[in-house]
Length: 119
Image (cartoon, rainbow, N blue to C red; front, top):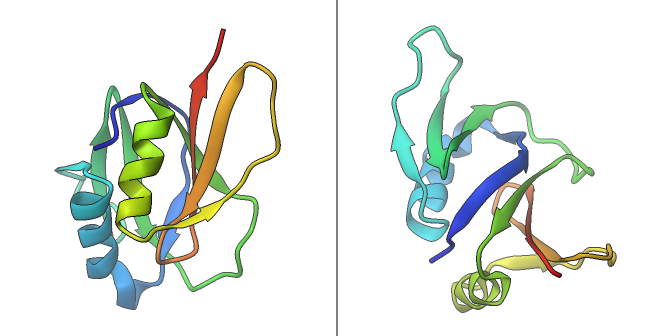
């Protein structure tokens, strides 16, 4: 599984008709714990990621953009092996000194960056 340490930034949306599929992806594939969300909030789910939250909301399908979340993980190689074993799509990120990183694309077109700081 992925050992999340902190979030850099968050924004995830899926089409309304794929909301339940997204809930399953984020709980069963990514391994996030679902938490309660306020009743006034739009349709969607909230998840706990280490000491922050990921809010999954709905909006009309959009083309892939640069919007994404970024999570620091304890073991970037293990995170990649886990996602590869489940056939998740990858997006290679440009090199940034001091960190190892890659992104994966969820089944709904959202880009999720994982990174590990190096010394």
